[in-house]
Length: 141
Image (cartoon, rainbow, N blue to C red; front, side, top):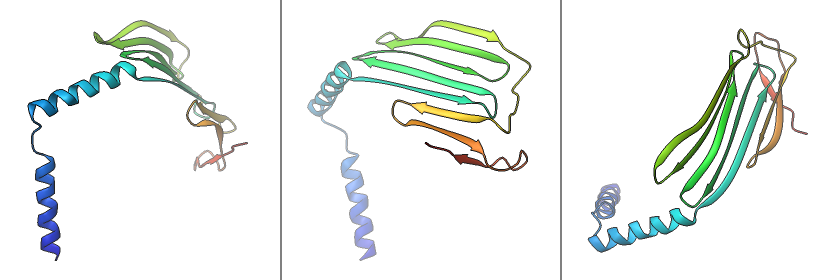
């Protein structure tokens, strides 16, 4: 029985891996073109890490084949922000700002990390043990 299931599975895999006919290939390309031209989304996310002294931010919007957005981070040394766009001409950085902010991250055992995103909502975490163990706990309100 096991051999039959194994052989049937292998045959199904080969059948699904068969090349598409030229008509099927053209239909697939046309469907992808239609999906790409009508695609739309927008999201953002923010992390303010007051424990490990860092931030991450990202936002992006897609309207058809054009994507615009930005991301930024700080790590105790620099704060960097990049603005970009992508379309039929590829990915391009439109503007980039970098600013030195310090001598490195400063750990804060009493700090709090706040996380927020358009798809995940908002929550925070804190340390619930000492600096050596660094175990985090979720403190959603």
